[in-house]
Image 1 (tube, rainbow, N blue to C red):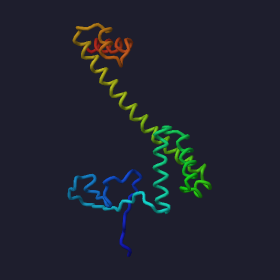
Image 2 (tube, rainbow, N blue to C red):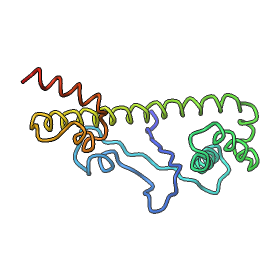
Image 3 (tube, helix red, strand yellow):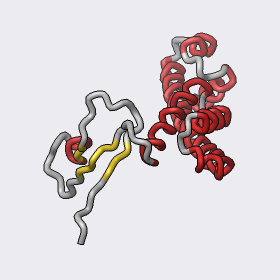
Image 4 (spheres, one colour):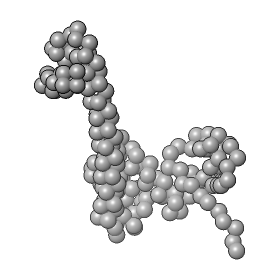
Length: 170
């Protein structure tokens, strides 16, 4: 049976990154864990093989998303630049539409996740604002207009609803 080997393709700048990484060192501060995995790291090199071309493609894509954001323009520019530089050229010529579709679906997934996170943060902030407003209303030392100035996430109508809730519970 062949000896298993694991590889990680790193598409950033090597800097002082190691040639091998360890699961326990990277994620568990070197603790003794039941499953230890070590992987060889592949960085960009001077070779013209498919892996190196993929790394270059990813770097070009990262540059383009910095310029154009997570847009179709970033994808199409990445493909154009890579074809001009003879990076994955044959593959991109044959499957450009497929590559665009796949990369745009990655954007969609990423955008959905970012939107979800923003929504969750907003809901948490709203709930916190509601709790603060309830406390201030219970104290009875401020008008609703004054509370609205202190808790800008809530409208005056929302504060009136919260006041009605508080008064019912009292």
